Image 1 (spheres, rainbow, N blue to C red):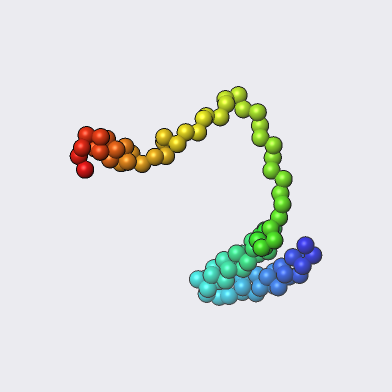
Image 2: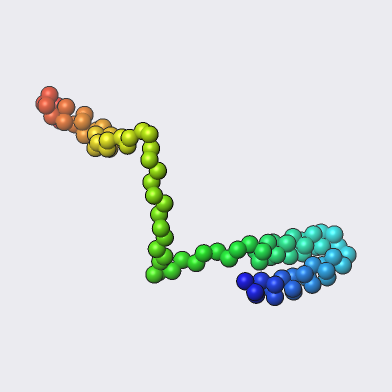
Length: 93
């Protein structure tokens, strides 16, 4: 992006000026803030989310040596319902 260099120019100048701050605590605070801003401009811009969305190609699934396990609903049932049905069979509510 061409505007990245334009954005970094004032930060470079601020870095030069903040090195002249006599108070060490304030100088460190200013240098830290400028460093964070420089890092922000040096990183790639974030991918924006839109309502339209993007279509991305999904990678093809790799051939696994182990087959997929069969999905059964038994593992997803509530164990309490089994107890209730057993109680009903016995006659306990």
